[in-house]
Structures are given as C-alpha cells and as structure tokens.
Length: 292
Ligand code: ZN
Image 1 (spheres, rainbow, N blue to C red):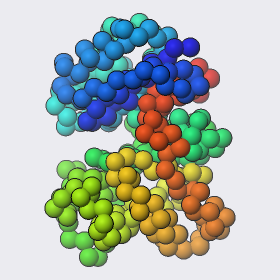
Image 2: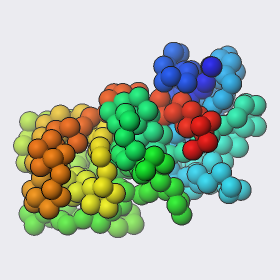
Image 3: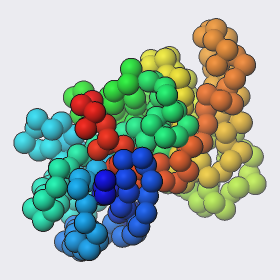
C-alpha cells in the first residue's frame, strides 16, 4: 500500500510516502511557518504523490480523540497562527483518504514498538528532549490518551540545590521542560547545548533532571523500554549519565534485572533513528487498521 505520513514539529514538518512495513520512500521537509504558507506546501507534496491513507504525528497540545468535534485541532500553542488551528480539517478539505492523527511522540513510540527499539514490547515510552520535552506512552499495547494526552514534559521534579536558574516554562517555571529542554540549557549556560558538548557540568545537571522524569515514568508505568530522542539527546554522553542517575534514584527498589543489571538495554536511543517520527505516521495507520 502507498501510505502518506506527516511528522509535524515546531520547526519543520516532514512529509513522506511509505508502506505498511515502515519503509519510507520519498520525503520532503517543509519549515513550520504560518499555516497559510505551510499547509499549501504539504498539500502540494501529496497532490503529486498518490496515497491510500494518511497518518499524522503532530506537535501539540492537540485534540486526539476521534469522537471529539475538535479532533485534529491544535489547541493552546503559542506558535503564530497555529493556536486553535484545525490541522486535520485543513488536510481533509483537500485530500480524500482515511486519516489518523496523534501526537508526534505517540506516533514515534508506536513505530518504535512495531519496528524499532521496543519491538514486541507492550509497555514503552518515547521521550523527546529538544525545544520542549514530550513523551508518547504505550501501555499494555495501547497508546495512552485520556483527558487530552500525556504531558510528561510538564512533570514537576526536584531542583538541584546548586541550580539557581528560575526555569523557562510560562506555566510552571521549573517543570522538567522549563528546566531541562534545549532552551533552558541555552538560557542557563548562556549558549546552546551544541556549543557545550565538552562541559561535563552541563550534562551532569541535565542527566540529574532527565533521570527524574524517567524514574517517575518507570515507577508509574512499569515500562519495559525508555527510548530517548530529540536534539538534546544528540549529546551521546547523556545516556550513561542518565542510566547512572536513574539507578541511583531507584536505589535498588525495583528488583528486576532490567534495572539492576541491564540498564543499558532499558534506556536507549531510537532504533529507527531520526525516522521514528515519520514512521510513526505509518504505524498509526497500521494500528488503526488493526482496530487498536
Ligand atoms: Zn511546564
């Protein structure tokens, strides 16, 4: 089958053509500008590439309940033109194929569970750490939705006693995203993370915060795989630091080999690399067809 997929991020929107096995052929990258400029480019891509269904993983907050009249509508984003923008409606008005939409991170965790690092597991999370922090959650084989969708980035965590940075979140100041997303790193240290790669203190502190998010998720969800993606995780020294911190925080309480011996296999990079999000759109379609 020829399937369309969209990974809609805050900076760029990636459109792709793929199949039900998670293979991606053609793709295009479109900057996330005002919808009046961006939507026509998306429509243009799919107008010249015939598809039978379309799966969309998008930034949010977004209404993902198919029973809601607002299904597919971006809600409270500060992004210019996107607040209360009916993304799914704009696509449906011009593309006449079945569509399914979820958060970018829910799409990514689904792809990782089908084809990537969490293959065969029913309980996994995909956390992205970039301009924000977000997580998609697969619990007992199903994506977690609920009232809206998980907003893991705004989890409240303990501050490091030596960290005086006030935090960056307009709602909570020092929630996880406010204190550990890319913009928080840049504000605290005066330059972006990419220019701080050799500063151990930066990444020790980052691991201190991200490990709390992960420990909380492990405790709440009993998750079997934690996949960490996003721009900040390009700093590969973070992985061992985070594993070390999670082990320290849990302190032997969860007596399972996955945690006491195999942490390197529990907290991992995306198996699908940077394609996890784009393949997520394909996974959403496959999932919907399977009636999940
Ligand atoms: Zn927050």
